[in-house]
Amino acid sequence: MAKTNEPDLDMPDIGGIGAAGEDSDFLDFSDIEESAGFGAVPAGWYPMVVTGYRDITTVTPGGKLPVGTKGTQFEFTIDEGFPYAGRKVWNNYWHARQNLPMLKGLATISGQYTTDQLNEGKHSYESLRDGIMWGKVNMLLAIRPARGNYNESNNVVKIAPYDPAAIEGVTQANSDLPG
Image (cartoon, rainbow, N blue to C red):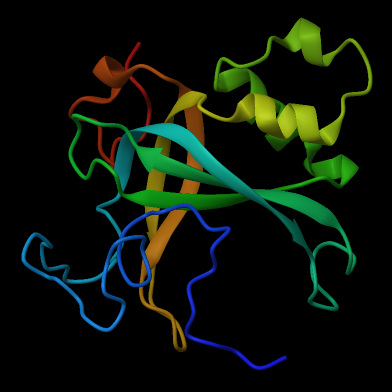
């Protein structure tokens, strides 16, 4: 099937090219701010909200996990009203038994589940994943140096219960949360 430039009519109107009521042959930059790119935010603690996810599967032979291992890549967004608000970081949570403590930690630390709830037995992956959405955490980010064709990026080091006041002035060099 050939690709066309026709807008997908089933897509919601989010503005931009092909949006309902707009001329798709022209771009209007009059109310758009310039962006210098998407570099890493400085290392340190940030108040984050879980704002998205996608299903992932390992594909690299010889890695830490067998090819075909399922997981979830969660998207975290720096909370409104804080430096770098709206910037995003992604972290993978693998469904392999040895990696489940990280996923369980995210579920409880985000305030979306209690340990007792999770200890009740098996849980549907979809309901757990959906339940974690909109949870909040404090997240310690480090800088992963540029390598190959990749620019420097952020790496998630640690998560803690959401408490923006606890991370004011805490940096990578002093990564322990006060209290």
